[in-house]
Image (cartoon, rainbow, N blue to C red; front, side, top):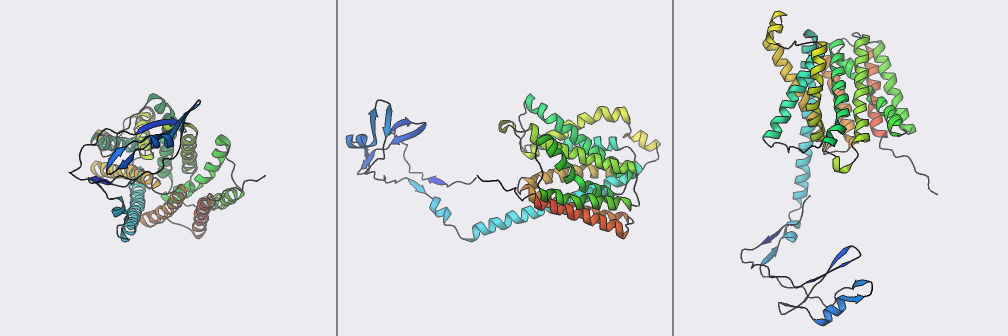
Length: 401
């Protein structure tokens, strides 16, 4: 928020005690201001009489007549001067904001591309998605603690009740990223993201079941091409297998459950956190949640001794894993930064474009074989996602009496 600036010159003398009278009426604070005569303040009986009178039920405050604005020899008000700045100032500020927002969108897409490419390369040779997921949460937690330690972002004060409310979000966030990595390890990147285009379908179903938010006819209509396009792409996908398919579906379910839990549990204004802080806390909690799961299901696999015994190129594997983890945290962090600057609808459209960019770049990089029918199915599904993001803006008409 920007306010008018008032500068005080050095010659300003200390403020003398005020002879204003203050009254409280109906919960509002009123001030009976003195009259100024020849630069000196004087509270005349007529002013007091016209400003307030005592009634049996309290003070009655009336407008003060004949008030003369005092002269100020020491106060220089610059609000008018600043508001009268050149016309190009708001325009240049708008241009800067646009450039910053465009840079954030570009970084969002770039980090997402690099994450999917490097993550896929690691998962193709290192078939331990739980270990990879936990390593990504570990790197993210280290980045969060680094920012808090050096005041790059304000460290929050968290209460026990807030942690209890955030815990369900952390659980579904952990499962969502785990299932995504499991899917990426089984099928092509393009196919995983085609299936993840069904997120709006799960969002509508879960919102109706748990929040009572019934979708409009326009929203239901936009889901049809999404479901149909994903089904068409699945039938003609060269890398199709059921493990990869259901893992991506489970990722959709858990990620959209996170959004529902956010609305259902994080509703108290005094308990609310900004998006970046909430994401940072969830990242740390997800790291600790994944530790027992990883040790139980996969054991300790990410050690130099194990990697060397398995015949892996340790330097290359660790480097690509680190880059993937950094990009994993970075693209989600930037996503929340964008969400603080634009509306959810604009963010949803940007997310749809991001999915298209990731699918196209992954097909080109990995030379994924794509049939014409598969391309049509993917295109229909993504077009449905874009349509969904647009029709969400249409408000249902309320019936007037």
